Length: 266
Length: 264
Image 1 (spheres, chains in turn purple, orange):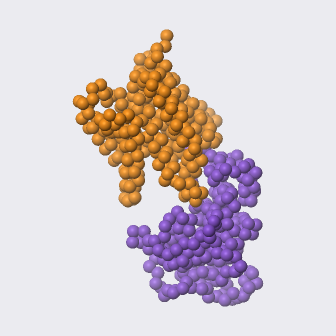
Image 2 (cartoon, rainbow over the protein chains, first blue to last red):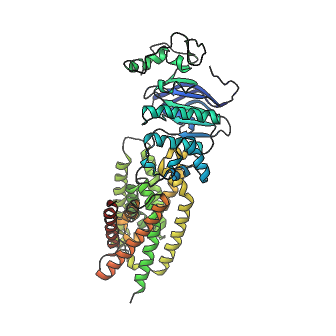
Image 3 (tube, one colour):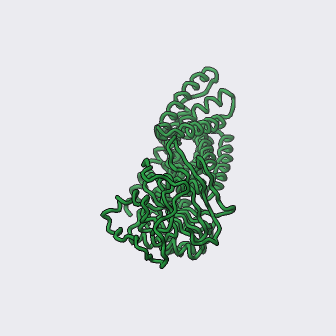
C-alpha cells in the first residue's frame, strides 16, 4: 500500500502489545513509517492512540512485541494540547530554547516554516490555540527531525485553522522529506494530507489510503454512527474515481491474522 | 553602633535569600509548594537524627529529604491517592516523628532548643556559619545554573523534555537535594515552620514584573534580600522575632507588588 517503496523504514512496530493492570490497551499492532510518508493514526477515544505514540517515542515500554527505530533516527515530537502554567513567564523564544542551544537565525527559520516568526517575543500564554500548535511544531523542527510525531496536532484549533495546519504539515514533509506520524480522531480533516491511514481500536482494524479506509466496514462500524448527520460526510467513494486519478479497489488490507466482524469488546 | 551578631544575621539572611529566590521560582513553576513544606517538616527529624549521631544537621536534613522523595515516588506508583494527600500524610507524620525523636535526645544533648529550630535563631548565627552558608550558596547556585535549561524544560512539560533527551528523574532528584540543602540552611534563619514562605513568596512577587524565566529568578532573589533586610531591621529596632519578621516583610512586599501590578 505504501507509495514510497524506495524509502527506508524509519520506525516500525511488530506485534506490539501493551497492558495496564490486566487491561489490554494495544494488541498485535504492527505498523511502518517510511521517509517522506504521512501516516495518520485514527481511532475512537481509548483506542490506544496516545499509548502507541508514547511507546514509539520511548516514553513507555511495550508489554510485548518490538519497536524498531532506525539507528540515529531523530524524532521531533508535538505533544497533545500542552498547557503552560501562567506562573511561568515564557516567551516563544524562551520556549523554543528549552529544546537546546540555538541561535536567533535558527529560531526564526523554524518559526518562518510555520508562519509564526512575528511571535518570537510574545508570551506563550497569549497565543491562540492554533498559534501555539504551530509554535510546538516549530520547536519539533529545531533538531531537523527525520520523523515528526504529532499527537492530535489540531486540537483546540478552529476548522479553518485545522485545514491550514494540515497543509503546513504537508509542506514541511515535502520540503524535508521526513516521515510524519500523526494522531487524529477525525479522518475527514486529514484526508487531503495523509498517504496512509491506520485505523486503531486496540488492534489495527484496517489500514490503507484514506478513501479506502473511510469505506471500510470496520471503520464504519466504529465511526459510522458518529458520522451520521454530520454534513462533511456527504460523499461516498464506493464508485471508483478519486482525487488522485488512481483507481483504487475498495477493500483495504486487514492486519495479518485478521478478526471476525463483531469481535470488538469496546 | 551595629553589633557583630547583627552583621552576621544580615549576611546569613542574604546568603539564604540569594538561593531561595531562584529555587523558589522552580518550586512555584512546578507547583511544589506543598512538597517544600513536607521537606521542611521532615527536616526536624533530620536535625534530631543528625544531632543524636553527632553529625552536622545538614547531613540529616538532606538524608531524610532524599528518603522522603523516594518514599513519595514509591507511594505515587499506586494511583488511588493523590500526591496532595500523600504529602499531607508524609508531612505531618514526619513532623510528629521529629518531635518525638527530638524530645528523646533533649535529655541527652544539653542546650538543644526546639524553638530555635521551629522558628529560627538567626541572631545566634556565628561567623563560621556565615562562611559555610556562602560556600553552600555558591555550590547550590552553580548546580542550579548547570541544570537551568533542564529545569525550565521539565517545568514546561516532562514528556517533551524526555524526548529531547533530558533525564527527567535525575533532574528532579538533584533539584530535590538542592531544595533539602536550602531548607537545612533556612532553618537557622526563619525556622522549619516558615521555610516554605522564603521559597514561594519572593517568587510569587517577582512573577508580575517578569517576562522571562531569567528575569523572574533575579527579581525573586532581590525581593528575598529586601525581605531579609527589612525584616531584620524591624526585628532589631522594634524587638520583633527575626524569622517571622522576615516572612511578614516578604508577605507585605507581595501585597505591595499585587497592588502596583494591578494598576496596569
